[in-house]
Figure 1 (cartoon, rainbow, N blue to C red):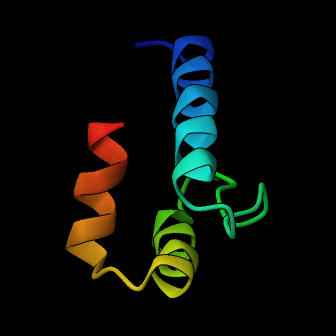
Figure 2: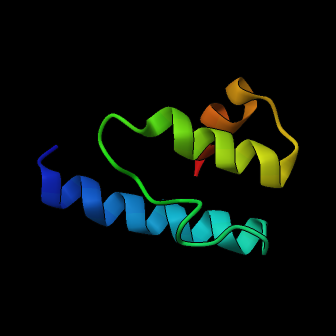
Length: 61
């Protein structure tokens, strides 16, 4: 998958995540290479899920 395809897919995932949890913002879901753990941590704080639950949930969207 090239970067353009990934970006498109990520935008779709962000939209679904924000629909599921209204408290999530674009800043919470900003994907930056090398900062995945920071993003997952922000989502953990807002959703109350564990790291593994967040990762699995994002993958399932």
